[in-house]
Length: 294
Image (tube, rainbow, N blue to C red; front, side):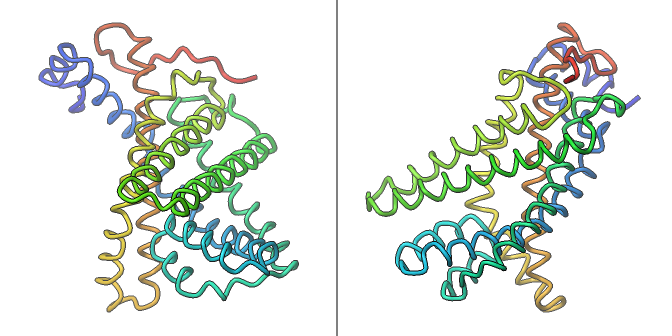
């Protein structure tokens, strides 16, 4: 018998709904091997970052070749979203040069690697909702949904960067950072809810995924402001031993935190649905009532 079904824990779960949900979420994390899935998701995301940056910066170089001020402002806003390597991008904006061939290669590489990351996310979400393997989407549909997810994420990043640039240009003392933080959080929550809703073979409603989306949005906001400091500390301590590779370790560490937050919030959604469908008292084993997508 695991800790989650011990007598003391079961009594606490029966008395308090919040404790019941938290225990169910943590037990789901254990049963679904979400820690392993988070590691895989962080790895595939790491592979996708550099092709995406290559494509995005090359497009900027082509489109804004004659507008250095606007280009640098967008670069500063975008670099703030990426720890470790963002500072290098801000320190040398002139390194961004437009090239049609670089754009083509970058977009092709970004689509290949990023779709793998989104396919991995779909598999992790299907594990969370305990969708049988034979009922999951086939590879072609997974790739198609992955491209849609990539477009949604790209649109969200453009929106977040635009919000930051507009607020900074307005030069509102005292409240500019708060407006940026709130605007970015709202964008993140909407995007995460959309991914939780559509990147799974199950069919949760938006009502089912909002709690986890809000949790993930808060986690991402915390990581945005405190994550880079933690990663910088890790990088400095590791640089003496690993040299340049310390940057890789720092970036993967940050991506690991993001992946853990994403899947833990997804487990919250699943835990709420399980407990809602199981009745007022904790039971052993999941009880979903979500139809599988056709």
